[in-house]
Amino acid sequence: MINPFRYGGIVGEGSFCDREQELRDLHRAMENGERLFVYSERRMGKTSLVRLALERLPRDAFDAAYIDLWPTDDEASFVAATARGLSESLATAPERVLEAARAFFQRLQPSLVLDTQGRAELRFALSATQSTGPELENVLRAPARIASRRAKQLVVVFDEFQRVLDYPSDRVERSLRSAVQEDAAVSYVFLGSQKHLIRQMVLERTSPFYRAGGHFVLRPISADAWDPFIRSRFSASDRGIDSTLIERIIDLTGGHPFYTQHLCHTLWELTEPACEATEALLEDAVELLLERESFAYLALWESLAMMQRRLLAALSEQAPVEQIFASAFVQRHRLKSASAVQRAVRALLERDLIDRSNGSYVVSDRFLALWIRRRHPTRAA
Ligand SMILES: Nc1ncnc2c1ncn2[C@@H]1O[C@H](COP(=O)(O)OP(=O)(O)O)[C@@H](O)[C@H]1O
Ligand SMILES: [Mg+2]
Image (cartoon, rainbow, N blue to C red; front, top):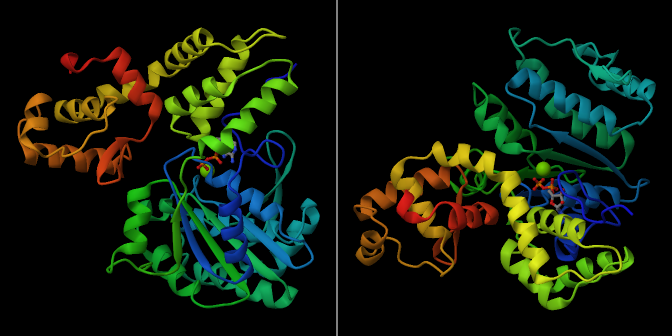
């Protein structure tokens, strides 16, 4: 029997929990030629969500280009990734993709190259040293040309969009901003996994993307949606789990999809066929999971300055934290002064290790908080 819980890759139809409202919002934006920014911490389900939304679009009315900017680090790699994504939106067979690339990106000299697994991959003749200005313009104007040539709505998704901020120059950011202005036949979705960066891009007056479109933060999935999802997967695989235990799981993970799937995966593993999951097994599952993550967590912990560790430890405590700049809090956690807290907050926000929530701050990774609570009592900091 295979484990019905998946974590790590993209989850699609059949292993996808809820997000009905978000799917509707995305669909509306895709239909209407909007520009939409969706952001959240990593592993909250952005890629899975947008891929599912794309999959559900009727092929006869939409073309969809999915462009992952994660591997890009400069203008040349951005141009190649975008040209590849757009070409692949027009065909599936490699020969046809090449044909499409030749039709729209002749100047980039497209060719097919076999990758290590023998699959044909589209390549372009572009080097980081050559000036890519005209190529950049060409690739950014292509969506409008494609949409009008095909007489379909074109949806362009840029995943891990915050990568453009790391490029040596800001030309991509600026050119992209003017290229995505008002064209009803092309819709753009920008996904970002460093919340503070995307928030800055959309909300700061000085940013080229200031008010460039709508935006929403992708939140954890609710306990109500997880309950039937988890229960049905246990029962369909000859195991049982009750709602009280599911509530415990969601308490621990905050409904964060990756950690919920990971914990359920481990709990399922520990539950014998024809048996019920129990509180004790859940405890074992949590320990096992923390053990697996502990190497990464330790490396992270050691990379933090003392004040940052103390603040993170304080925010990892179970009680809700308010008023982190108040002197009682500062003294109890040996944080020196309100301004020292301020600096630590800024540093931790910068790394997305903490997040604003209802006027206070929480540790973004629920399992890191748990690990700190169990393995690194504050006095050790
Ligand atoms: N709607 C969902 N239902 C169930 N699990 C999900 C859902 N969305 C995400 N996940 C879980 O979270 C993991 C990370 O999702 P992913 O789409 O890669 O997130 P992101 O792109 O935000 O980093 C998936 O491997 C899966 O385990
Ligand atoms: Mg992703």
